[in-house]
Length: 448
Image (cartoon, rainbow, N blue to C red; front, top):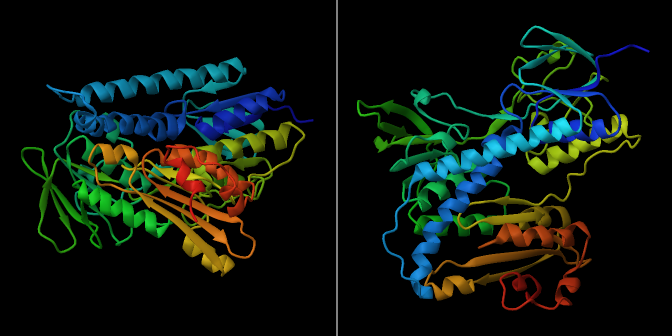
């Protein structure tokens, strides 16, 4: 038997890589992981976690605004971006330390440097050291896309937004996906003037149309300005460090920060996969089979680098499945047919299963139940915003095909409701469930 330095070498210590490392080690494998930046990956260091903390911080603006309707007298309010920013960054440090401890407790060696594939069973560290492994796992994640336009060097991406030295007064966000809409909501809530520019007239492509329309209406009422069908053409930096932005054929307008959030691509540049005979896909992704194996039998890949589903829980499941397959005597793949997702916009929206349009295309005869309501909290605070819940049902079987919701706490409610779609429950099952009153969630079982 060939003697390798490790049974598994993981390139990338994000959510998928850390989970695969830990589980493989628990099965008795000798494991090492290399990370060129910080242990924890995109989600922990520069993605979901710090972004959600910014969302929480920005929510206080609304809470304080509504407080007087509930009898509270709040005076002398002020906001300090530096305090919020630094608090978030300290929590990122804490989480990175926790992830590192997890690797140490599971006796996973970790190298804080870049690693590249040098062959089917060899990786080369940036320091020049070659390490051999029976299996190699690619878990390098994704990277923000920066479109080509004049002055794009003056723009930032979601990587840099957490480190802004001060709170900008005017923010331009290019893109209308979940990252764009979340940061647009954060900066709008914090008092910035936000302009969203997009190359098409569609925001949050892939989500149910009714939810997208509702979010657009609410965010426009909150003061977010939209410029559709006109991506950024040019960004000019002025003498005072402010920016002048030109979109489409419109007149230039000023900004302090331009955040480009037009998507992410797999981070495979210079990874050396060609040395193992692996050809990348058209977007730079690593092609894999149902068990996350590449065209090279000894190399696997999980997470955003495969461009299957760009969600942290999916990367974790894929990494766990690879470890079980290779070292746990339990070959298994990951299912992608019922994945709940959320956009932490303001208000947030959440979905699971088929949208109304998808259901009509796939099943033909469907029923759609909706609840368009004003949350009790908004009524008392004289806030006019309305929530919208939707159930998409197969008319022939009564099975729930999709659940879609926008309103306060929608992601928290949907996580439990997603079980119903996964379990193939019916509308009759919802109707038979007693409402929990008074709550927003009760609307799910009261639709008739």
